[in-house]
Image (tube, rainbow, N blue to C red):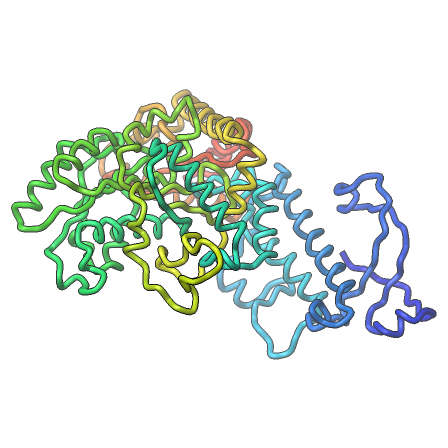
Length: 548
């Protein structure tokens, strides 16, 4: 919004702030602002930012009004974007190639300058940044496991940024540190660890939470690793299903274990780890002279949405004295649903769990919890007692200085938005949302079975919200399922996706998996999505792909 103002220089305040052109007046909001507060009359300051710079905002002397006006403008930009996000008629994205953004387009220039830009330009930059991004809260954004835009969670993120503190000590983040403890306790109870002395930490994403699980498991079995390193250890082996998240291999590389020592355990056609194959792999590793250490079971695989048989895997872990980790980054939210929580039966026997509230629970990115059943392990594994942070003679209970149990020093506050959403929704509110996502997945599954132009990757009702399918264009419909057909089918999903992005109407992911050529993977985690959005997706795929 551009504000042009009448300059008044008749009072003393105008002379003290000569660069502000202002007019104090009563006005009724109109246009976009009218939607925010219809019919209300408010006192408003109108500011022309073309001659005002960042140096005149707080903490500059007399910077209060400039700061207030500037932030009001930013909020207007955000509210306008939010309304467009929830407008089903708007595009999901306005796509441009990287070279177009680098070269600059329509006045949007990403280059950095030595001289400061006026705040008017900064506001334009804010608008353009949102304009050329992706509306991940749009009801037809299905591209990733994390989607949606929760308004209370957004408010929590704003407040978190305003507080701008660090989670390493209680003295600088007292409320947030206590909130983290309360949230971790709640999640422990939901898993089924009850009153046990469990522990945990919020980390920068599920990959880091999974890394923590291997780090702590290795320390539990070989505490000498902390001082002496991998040279003091025997060859160790980790196990994860062939459908597990790639972060297990990444963690093995980072921790010096090596990707060759991560054993991919075979799965059944549905994508679940086969317990007999796991036991066979463990015995093979032992014969090779390696030490089996750790098993990662997945509760909600990334592509198929499959749940490994946790109870059977727990039996094997107990038999061979292995650490059991459950990667429930995606599927952990089902624990909040009385209708679907049985799919994670056996998770209470795990030694550690990864759970990402920024996925099924819809918390703004990022929000991931690493939960460990044995209290004290995180601290013992990571503690280094930096004297400038973790002084033992502080005036409060220094057990709340949680920073020494993490691998980070600085740690972002990821807990407040989750805590605030839990307060706003209650556990029941999360359950209602999660049940809705499973109902949408069931609806899509039935629609695909009823339509002749689609084939399911596997014909089984969805366990999570993942639904995997091929679109079969008319040109391939009557061709036998032979290598030539598969080669051509492999090209269909990428071509349709490219057209989708160019038109900006919808976003959905695709990938090959195992022996299966490229297929679409639908996931639901967005509270704005309705059945009509699913119908639109299927019709749009047909419209964009019928000539292929």
